[in-house]
Length: 419
Image (cartoon, rainbow, N blue to C red; front, top):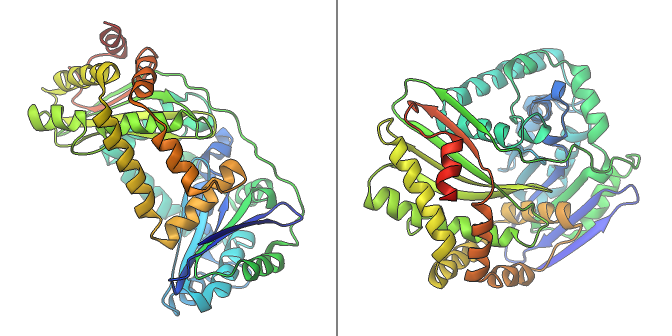
């Protein structure tokens, strides 16, 4: 398998990986324009744009976009994150040129039809309402908000309903003109693809775009704080986060291994102690996510209002204990889980295309897989313990939702961690 990277004169990057055994391919455009690139008055607009891309262009109606892909048995989709908005399709080898043409059309030429805009506004408002009605979704928005207060990185990707209700086509067009620039576009394709053919297609589809549009957005600054929302629910939900390194920091691998060993699976410390031995919850886990300059290790659990105090105390005790005595065997297991997850994911052309785009966006190159494996293998148990000891000495962010009257405050959590 061969990875090839090319940059057009206007700055647009094209990355491909040929997978000889496949007859299909995944191709898409990744735009460095997500929720963190919005101003406060634009919060939610990147996600709104993702929806509107499928509602018609100057050349195609919304139905024609869907039919053109599905008539050949393919599928097309998109997503918005805090860093990126992505548009991608999976099709057979012979249909790659058509799929890329459709994606380029919806990215560069959205019609923003007034009637379609109102329909999609209603859909997004329903989506926001669904999140608000889902405690183990909304609590992570609240956690992000208290972790990064009063800044783009802390705002919800969907945006507030009152803001979404006011967006118009001029607002959408202005965001596209500002952020959908060639230096912030990455075309990525994996599977049955020919690099030179993809480059030629991109020259025709994107080569006319004027250069400009480097990275922007306000840097994230971790704050730490608490949000507690009391409500009569069946479960009390707790989400706790500590600041961890950004994705360019070598310690990001140490952070990921620590969170995996702590709460990344059924063999992890939190799962075994809190759920299996004590039966305090059905679901508990830890995970690490990274942004450009910062990241979060998050611990989540849901339990009864009567047990929330015990669950929180036990979680902190396990966190402290892991920081002092995590074993070589636990670190080895976490390394194996990370490597297996990485390698298994690469069996899918869609996962490969996304990984290529993400790595080019971070490093402006695609580090060899062996380099990533080596960085994972280089993480030692002592390195994890040192990292974890430093972590528990910092101020976390805390979000609580439901019957949480008995849950300890953030100040009490800090005291327990310091004891």
